[in-house]
Length: 78
Image (cartoon, rainbow, N blue to C red; front, side):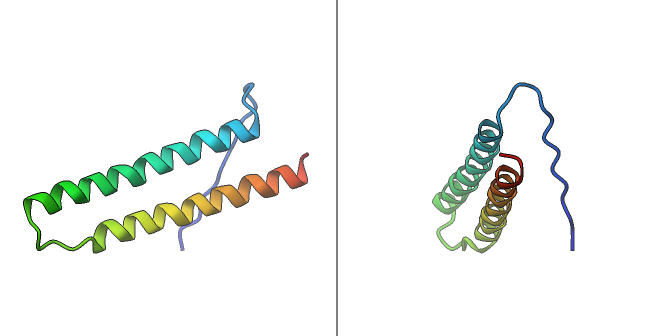
């Protein structure tokens, strides 16, 4: 299993602002995958969204992990 390490450095950005920026980047990537699929589907209606859905699901899981990280961080360091 691949592990990830998050390092948030204090540089004048509050935790909630950092979380919002990261979540927005993930949401943008999810939307990019959706648009990519639609573009591919327009060219070829026989394609399936399986590979895109796997990528999107992985990003959604990562988003939940990050939200949990920030939630725990706020609970430990109010």
